[in-house]
Length: 247
Image 1 (cartoon, rainbow, N blue to C red):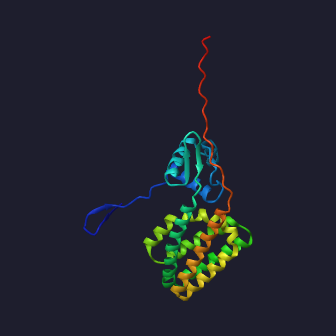
Image 2: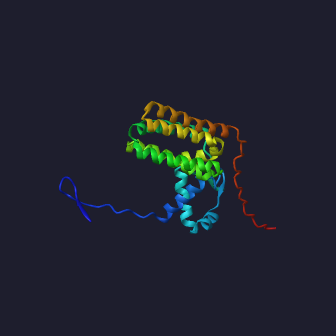
Image 3: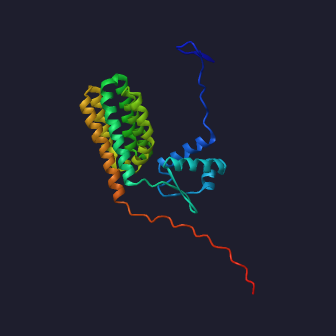
């Protein structure tokens, strides 16, 4: 279908492009990493991933190459692919950026959310509390991401929402290991945040979100600092072919 733009020129309507197999494989591997099914430092065997995902090895190989460039996977010559182990500096920087983005999102949400927005936030909060009570960590993490995304959406700032979305999946990766540790305290903070948004109290919503994201950041950093140091994978030594004996 052809559309006319403001200048009177004819422009083609954009057709949604279906995801390629490689893109689908990238998405699937990212989800396995974020959900913790593939652990930081874990060796990624192409044949095993291909069998798990029901595809050939070629799209898996291509996906690992791209994920390496995006910081999800580390490729070691002679050893293979491994799930990236985020450094403390990486995590600290990303979670600090998250705090800045989501603090502003909360302030703007208190200004623009409206009755329907608050109702949707409370429904997500109730679902998250139920997940914690039933010890459904994956459900709690997924619902936590939905709630934070909705707060950003309710801010009414599209640029802010786009920036927050860029870091959301990696934030979820960092949040998963501490979700059980944060437990109900995290959802109590969510409930207080929603109260502030409903009241239209921008400063209070801003402060609650800042404290909330900093609590998650501190929990993650504390857990990482207390982890035992794992030795780096040893390089694979390739045997030299023997020279045939002449005598």
